[in-house]
Length: 346
Image (cartoon, rainbow, N blue to C red; front, side, top):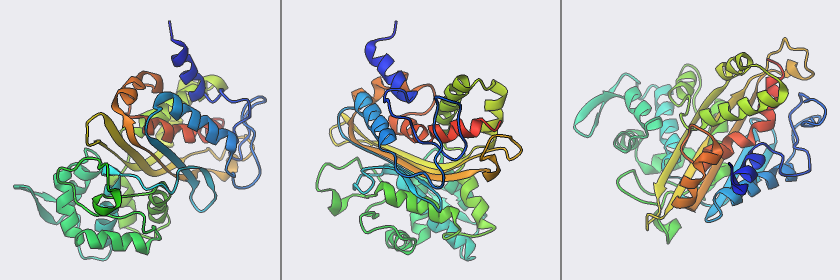
């Protein structure tokens, strides 16, 4: 038997805990489902409230936030988007960007060899180790190759990130600091995380051929992708879509991103974060209105600062298999109406 809390969480995840309809992109869903507005999707208070309620139910303690923006378009969802949080390994995407810019400029080759600890490896192997298993040793070697922390901050300023987001330390042993945050900690806002990934997608960091390598090295982020599948399975069941349709849809989803987590100073809290770029596909040959628009590209970010370890671990059963933390689930939940609309074209 499910507890009342588990049932409430499932309802929240399914988007039915609020009476107001959730706004969707320009591909209408069946009667009683999501209503599609014309033009760019504005911020929808009901959807913001749904996600806020979900976070409050799952992890009451700590500060949380989320951010979703269509590339080249409107901010769709934003809660605590300008809060200065501790990004842990999510900020390694900025190291990745700095190295890939050097690759584009011909200053570094992906096949070059660098020293990581006591071993030698190619730049590409070090980037892959940093972006997926999140190796701190590889990250520190790449920071040096990029030109140090000042070079990373310079790149952030060039692509429009605010002064709130700043590298102040490398990835030697360092937990989520309590105070004073701005004096010694790496800091990031959700809006700036979005700016980084949007700049990358728009070719403002690297261009071809380094452009494709940028996203391939950071592709298939292993924690958020299973949550997108979980949401897609739920929406497919609601819409009467087959498992084959979901499989085809997921094969077309393109996700690149970077997650991060670390313990708070007292080991009873986490600092969690996730950010990236996702391509939500639609099949142009479908008869569904709006399918001709094809794929839609979004940047997303979610974080939890000093959230309870006990509450986060207890939430795993409610947010489905795959992924490690609530921020991965929130990232996928923000995309729910767009996933549902896209599934109609499969």
